[in-house]
Every structure is written in C-alpha cells, then in structure tokens.
Length: 239
Image (tube, rainbow, N blue to C red; front, top):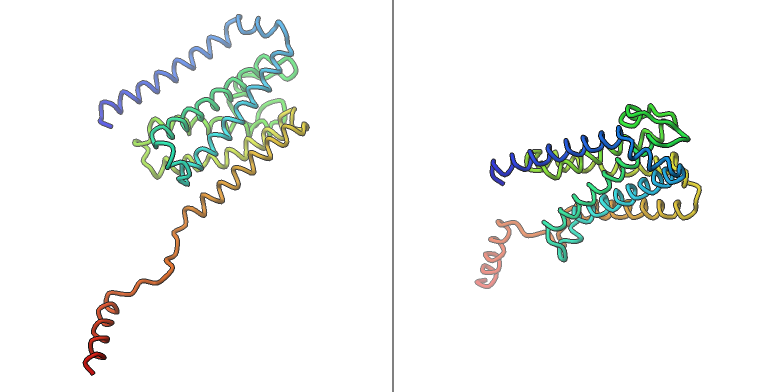
C-alpha cells in the first residue's frame, strides 16, 4: 500500500465515521423515529432485545472466526484476503447492532437513559455494573473494527495485541447478557450462551496448542559428530 492509498483509506474511514455520527444525531433529535416507536411501546422493547441478541451472536462469530484464522484452520479453503474481509465485515456488523441496541434505550419507557449514560460505562440507572460491561465491550469492538483499516500503520504487534483484547471483551459481553439481559432466565438463551462460551474456550485451547513449536522426534546429529562418524567407520574398515 503506497502513501497516497493509505491517506485515501484513512480519509474514507474518518469521513464514514463522521457521516454515521451526523446521521445518528439527526435521527435521535428528529421526531420521526420517536413517533414510530410511540406507536407500540412493546416494539421498542422487542427491538432492544433483538438487536442486543444479534450483536452478541455477531461478536461471537467474529471471535470464533478470528481464532480460526490465527490457528490457520481455514487457510486451505478460504483465501487470506477474503477471510480478513469477512472477519472485518462481521466485526462491523456486530458493532452496528450494538450501537443500535444502545441508542434504542433512549426511547425505552421502562428505564430512562440519557446519552452520557449510554456512552459512559457504569453510570446508568439499570444494573450499572452489568450494563457497564456491555458499554466497555462496545468501545472495544469499535476499536477492533477500526483497526482493520489501519493495520499497517499500527504494526502487526500492536494490531495483534488489540485483537487479543477481543477475548476479554467476549467474556465481558457474556456477563452483560447474563446479568443485564431479561432473557437470561430462558433455557434457550442459556443454551446459546453456553455453546458460544464452549466454542470460544475449545478454539482458544486449540489455538494455544497449535502455536507451540513441535519437538523433533529424533535429535539431529551435530555437524562435528556427522563428520566424525564416517572417519570412525573408515578407520574400522582399514583395521
């Protein structure tokens, strides 16, 4: 990637983020969305639940796909460029659903949230610790999603370290779902979360095992020993 292409990508990223912020601000301050949600208050609650569920599923898929990439499980049947594109796309989708999930809380009639309470963790009116874990995870997801576009500028080491934080984010958002979500008592939801945690733990263990260098079956002979052996055999033949 040359300098001109890098600046163009960075400009496109900043421009896209600014446009998204402006559209979200206009939507929140406008009356159209509020009128639509006022038609049926239960619809607001259903949207909050469904977007939160989709964000959790997409975040789980992103973490699992990242583990599959880092352990080189998919290298034989998925090109590297396509794999990274899918990984970035799923991360952005999960971040988008999480943002919608949070913004819809502004229109909830049961628990009233303000914009600062949504943006800043551990200060909301409803279960601040559990809800705050979701807020922290959202900002981590956003940073990880943004890092795909500036990977070369960050450097592989810092980029990898940032993505390693996704594991902590996954368990934090799992705690958020279990202790702040109203569906936590449903057996289907518990089964889904259990399978997600099991998949991440198993793949993480496989990733750690795959990263360890394998020991050679036989210790290779040193160069000095390799030279001495033919000489020893030749002397025995002469005698």
